[in-house]
Image 1 (cartoon, rainbow, N blue to C red):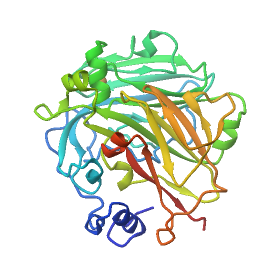
Image 2: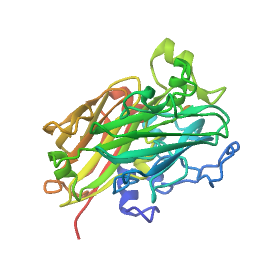
Image 3: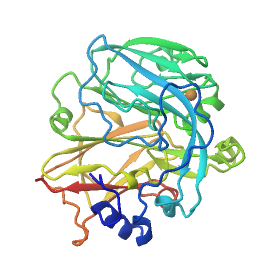
Image 4: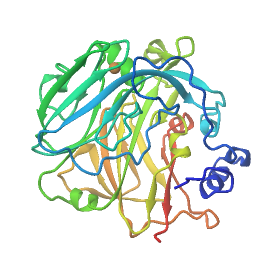
Length: 366
Ligand SMILES: [Cu+2]
């Protein structure tokens, strides 16, 4: 899938047309210089903190399993100059002090990424989450799938260089958000979410539901939207801007502008796709895929009710998530010459103009 990212590949051609600038296609994946130091982490950082939308573990954690989540602070770019900053009307490299989670299931990308690792459970299973803090400030985990203990954050709070563990049973199925609350003050909750510390935890229903039927053998994708308020001086959270304007500087899919243009989800004709989509921005996302109709939508994270059918746009509130099924039978393969390309976005105009935009590509089955 877009393995050869040079000019002339399928993805390159598509992007040059979508973005209206053939020059962009020549440099789909520039290497961004890493500014600043990585903090106390044993992992070799990659420069691009955006999580691959295909990075979804295929198997739920076993009963009694332990999953490690690591906390990091690292500077990278939230708005790379090319190719996709054109969508934000910006065109400059913007360095940003990311807070990011790494770790996760075996086989996942273990380096820090935004969003944090996708955690997959089955209802009724008991697991232990271990938080390891490689940052210079306090970090924590609040799972919306957890009953009591402040969603886990009452226990899962680790000082710099420290760690914490928490064991819980996944009692209620759903697709839930998790996020850092810093030291627990309202300022820190907003700051740590703004800077990238959030993710999804899927608790699959114990019984066979419509959700599990559609999900079976589906290609699964992980997408997370966030609003970012940016202070150019600190290259970090602009709390004053947030409180005084409520107008975000950037609206991201998977951590930065253009991440899902550079590396879009790639579905396969004939195979269902399942998109797990979360939001922690301050506004309700209007999630839409141009050229598609969303066949099944489990709204508000509810995976046990009957899904909505044939939905054009899904409203996703802050601190909420949805599961979206797209039928492989009616998918239209991406065909630029024929005008078939799916653009995935928050359809609210200021928000896709500020970056909440990617592609959803479909390969024909072999
Ligand atoms: Cu944090």
